[in-house]
Image (cartoon, rainbow, N blue to C red; front, side):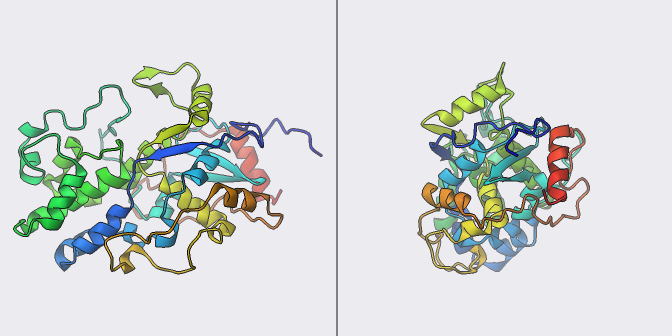
Length: 350
């Protein structure tokens, strides 16, 4: 009965041997509440709202305060699967999949294929400089300003307080604040990325870019066993991930909130443990420039749910696919026999 089925993927950590430490998460979802408040003039906000980035304003405010403990728990419970763009975790006795398809369903972002020849910048690479040569770039000077060391906080302050700002600048600034401050946040002090600023030469093309895929690539890269660390190839990625999760704190870039939102959708009992009154409020409904000030779900609450005998987990949430070509798909993602076997067991209600 309790024999280990060797046809299933192994766990990163043995059951009940999970580390319990902190995460440093740089993404700032409060940016959305700020923009909802500042962009009260309809044209600028409508332009963003009608794109897939506008779906972010439909996120439920009650679920947004980031629980580093919940995200750390899901990462520590992950299975060892030879799939670059998929994280399988286990909660209770059930697996839970976090892939580009779930990411797109949860966020509503465009997860279609990247343009031909495009390669996502690796902000974890040693010596990576998002602003190198920025002050010489004409578009940077027009949209961001004269200096290459400007921060996202500086841009947000200007957007809010510069009453003389040209209308045309409001949309590009807002988009850079969303992308570099939340979706692809790579540093504690957020700064605009030159490449993304250059893409604002055509705002419509920028809005149609698959930001969901771009954000997911950076997000999943720091959650799974790393191929590279500080620019150097890693000999044993699994051991390094174990080591990082056992550290007092572990740095997570981009948009890990998506994993938390997936957990709330797939494990409904977790929602009952959020220390805030039940409501259906979204960011779009906010009238204040900040998200509601309530705590996030605590580790004890996560463990109580996991131990509850009536726990229900949906391993594969229903997907809401976007219309874009290659939405949620990868041309080079491998199948993994142990994952296929696990999926078959769940499909047969095992």
